[in-house]
Length: 546
Image (tube, rainbow, N blue to C red):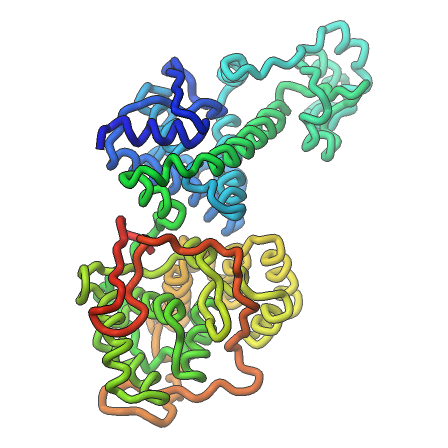
């Protein structure tokens, strides 16, 4: 690939035409509205690494919000990640280039669906706000000047004329010394800007500005909200423009796979390998499904045990999850065989299903070692159809079915209402994190919750760590510190014990109708064959994906 080809395609995708404008950027320019895509020469490796580093920052913001971290702790943790992945402390040419390029790559990668656009818009705007608030007043003024954010400055005469009204604004009434004359000094020494009120709706809604004749008198301290609103509006339009120009990107076979799969890349802990000490006994899966699995995997396990079969996407989602928790290939084959052979012969299982298990363990086909699905991939993937149970219950179940499932899982009325509200507001991962909080009381004080709500295996790992602390070092095979008594009939020499049937009132769950509008997994994204032997389709992941 010609190094510049990737960026030329990127520029074309944003503007919809193959014309370029070279933008001169000063080393001190620490922030941008990203109105113009840069022209630059980068390698394919840089193309991907730049994007993944920025994606790590955006997902850190998401994770911190999921965990309810705010204030100084939020700033400190985000600063740590940015210092590694997206440094902008000096505003050097290299830092500015990476910032610009990574933004536009992710803009392309997240323009394809409404869900992706909403996610990118939300977290990119929050990153912009965070960086804007880090600037001092001089840097902020310079940024406004460079970005063409020219607002009318209010004269000192008008400030004195409106002194009584302006000093009633909360930003001044809360200043130290209010009521003793201090507020008057603050008002007269503050620079105000006269801005159309439609550009300051956030401040108007919170009664943080004075209005007169259709204009808001905004103190310099409150300009952040105005600028962020402008950025958000501009980015929203930019995402729609990028969506309309996607054919230019997809026509380039060198970067199209990277763009297609970027939004589903996982940037957290790697659960691809079973590490010493992390193995789980298949005998404990019934207990662990109730105690330590997230709702999506619990539903798959319950339906596998009751129906003795899962369709392709359910097998893949649950099978890779079990691989990630520590179940090896031989145990996995035995586990699936014991269930499936209750409704079919061993020969049928070996011919139609065993190959795909060996495939995602990297022992067949291209010998690609597949990794478990993360929450983003599950949420953005195709929803379950008739007789299917994969996907995310918070995303793919209607309110009645989700409420019933949560109730059967032991979630109280108040917590259910909060989780249903989060799900209805499309905060699916927040709802999952809330489920962990409800079912693991006080976990935050004893274990790390990194990744909970972002990856099913992180949920499971955190739960196992919680019970290890709670039970004095014991994790699997026990419930509440006592040995599990679940040993249903059907045990064989392999040590695998078959589970009982799901009955009335169980928590298997019932998904809604197929999500026809859900984003399909693109051709070439890769997955093990749906069944059969070597004639089945082989996976062709372009990069390590979860």
